[in-house]
Figure 1 (cartoon, rainbow, N blue to C red):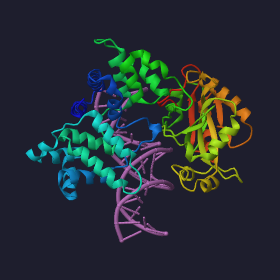
Figure 2: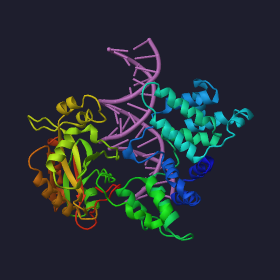
Figure 3: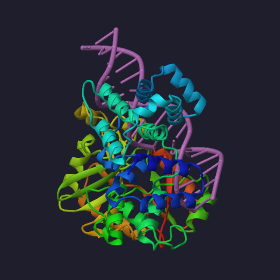
Figure 4: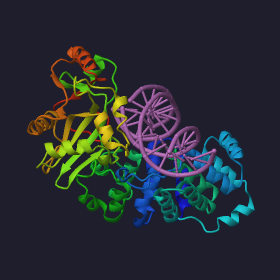
Length: 432
DNA sequence: TCTGATGCGTC
DNA sequence: GTCGGAC
DNA sequence: GTCCGACGACGCATCAGA
């Protein structure tokens, strides 16, 4: 498959803002793609090279990509900057620069790019490391761009800087996968009526792997993708509400209030093969938090579980919870780990339980998940792992006191959580 | 060996 | 994390 | 209501270059 085919599809996508139309453009693309290539096509369309937890980074941003472009197009940095200003973004500027080069350029891209070539080149860029790596990355990108026609160049550049600007993202791609491979050829349904693919994606957020599976095997291909310790679950998010009436409207008369801790979210997977930690955006952060790993190991020796925590730095003497700024010293750190563990000690407030010993709890009501969580934590005993502070309320009007209490405790505010029917864990959605 | 530029992920 | 636009 | 992109403050890592 030519990369240009992909680029042309991207151009079509950009031409509309209607989601149904975008979905159908993707459906045509997917149905016309060799099944073998579906993983790569989907990753590229997502603007990535693999699942988030694998942590592949291109390591090239606007500045460095600009250098590669200027070198390839044979123009100065200043000229390129002027083009960016005129065209609106780096991708369009590249396209313009390439297009204006005339017949000489045509000879350069005689060997037209394939999806494989682009994917593999970008993967190579991502794999370079060490001294001289910046130059090497630029050179690799340059070699790729050298063979690119103007339109392909537009999207390669945008892919590398991480701004495809297609107007589509995960949800639209998932719906397109569903329609392309699980619906009959000419079938029409209400958008998102089944969400089979999305449901799988929520517990196995690797769109390339899923796309490959459905393209090759249809619905059967999804069978192997259940919730699994070691594979992150998409996080359920909260929505900001301004006032008590809004909360009442959304939650009904009964709900639960919980402290909203001013920390960092950690999804912890404990199991037979050890502990895995994931960030809110499903990056692997296990090695950054040896203290958390250790706490999990000693607290949950013989269980298999997926839990969610808010990690907050505290003062062990006073018990005081410290603001986000403090925990941010822990984020992304690879040097001086031992010191930072000492300097920024964490408390882990558990607030949800998604999986326990072979049982998926996502579809259970919140009360049940919470009960199971508390009983699990009960076994954990004293230590840095604690249940989040929660209050069951009959009358959300009375939430003001709880809010003030939360603020006084060093939290950002409170979260209202629905209970009863419909209070299952809505992975990837804003439901709190 | 140090410093600034750059990239990237957290909220 | 916030915000606003489009559907 | 949902999805998407554009935006900001902050801290850390890596690398180039002095």
